[in-house]
Image (cartoon, rainbow, N blue to C red; front, side, top):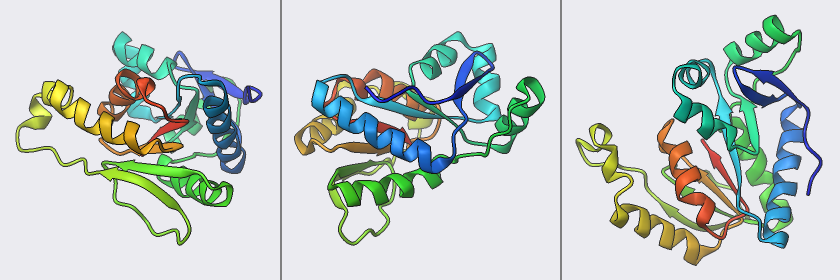
Length: 196
């Protein structure tokens, strides 16, 4: 198992305090560990001020974030909070910027990715194992049960399971993507999930 990264406790959560390059390296180590040991997929979630407040008010969101293996400081407010509350200087690591770092490393290591709800960028030698759009019909956002319907979950989960990617990027918006990764993603043969 990769060594535990340095973190700071912020709003009941352990937020990683390492530079993006080290976080990306740690994530690739997690992929390899999960794949070689059969451990559940690693979860990379982002902490921003909105999620900090949600996790403070909502124990379900707090527990969801605590399931992450890597909680990145995605937002300047999180970085300011770490400095003011804990005296720790950290740089923000937006999920949208960590994704290309992970894709670059995946390409170099020969790892495959799957895009769920996101538009793929072009990496010439990157193996994209599969993709599913994240379009939700009108009214879906008002009725999240559709997102968790057995049909919707089974369809995407079956596609991901059949593709057997090493890394899955999930872009469904927060907290839907974190819920999906924790509830459904952790049962799939994947090395790592990251919300983007």
